[in-house]
Length: 449
Image 1 (cartoon, rainbow, N blue to C red):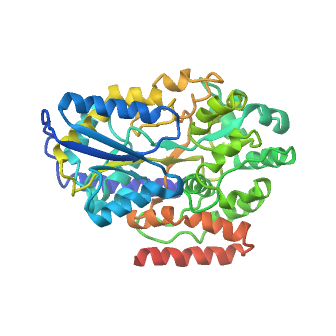
Image 2: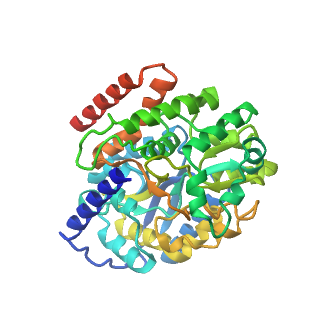
Image 3: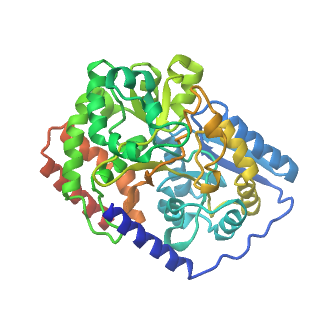
């Protein structure tokens, strides 16, 4: 894991340096801020989660004589990204807007500084993790808070019955809802073993399925997979590193794995893998618990067999994708005082706990203090299915594009560099060397802006 570790040390050193430059002024609470606050928030996959959030926000509004208006905006078709871009361009819209993963860096100059608010949240509710600091604090200034809804990670979600019957692997025994044998997991749950299982499941008519395209879910499983083979597109100091033996190994792996996946994965959107596992035809996907939550309602016989667990490991380690969601306050907001008060209220432990239950364990705060919450032990069926969702072993959580400079990392992610690279080789028949040369040229273009 040398490449990842060196990049992380550079990142931490950089954040420490920028953190020493300025100390946020205290966040000053304003009683009964008044007026109107509008929010453009992500439309949650899990039934009932939006209702809980609306109830909490509107109750706060009634108590503080603030009219709270929430629009839930779907991520299907990238409508949330399109809406944010339109508002930023027009300089008008919602006061508070949701921003996925890299988008805080994209709109840095149009988002209100929130150092005082984040300092208050971290003091009372727990510190954000390194990924939050990397993504929401470009150039040393917090431009957003971590959203209490939406943030999630990408474990493997597997059919216990199919893996046991056709691949001979008891995933519930390997990843129990309790103490684990990490040495056994490291020996038995590798990408080599996963590939063998995927081949057998495909032969039995139950393929593994994940999207491979310019969609969010594609980036969130391919980036960790590539890193597990030692491949990163760019270093933290801007060196292009895509031309590596690790990249070649990852592409060779994907050439074989895609033979055991549905042929149309290149056209899948972010909801397609959910539909795949719910349909009963899929043996595994990588996803937060949204597919499981919908299956409980629409296909309970499938939900009863779904188990969330660690990603496989490669020669460079074991990595899991993280998709943080952030809430930013536009600097053109007309009611910043009330908006900041509402953000603080929604980030409190009391409210986050309610939202965790409402999302049935889907939402994964970027604060370690929450990871012992009982929602991940109690949610069922099957009992314990979400226990390993917060990450109980040695997986390192990353975002695709890290540790590149944020402006470049955003393009690596948003333009689906790795997904296109894979598709050029596995679908387009391009040679690995030519595809890597293409990716290196793309990265040079990203640097030039």
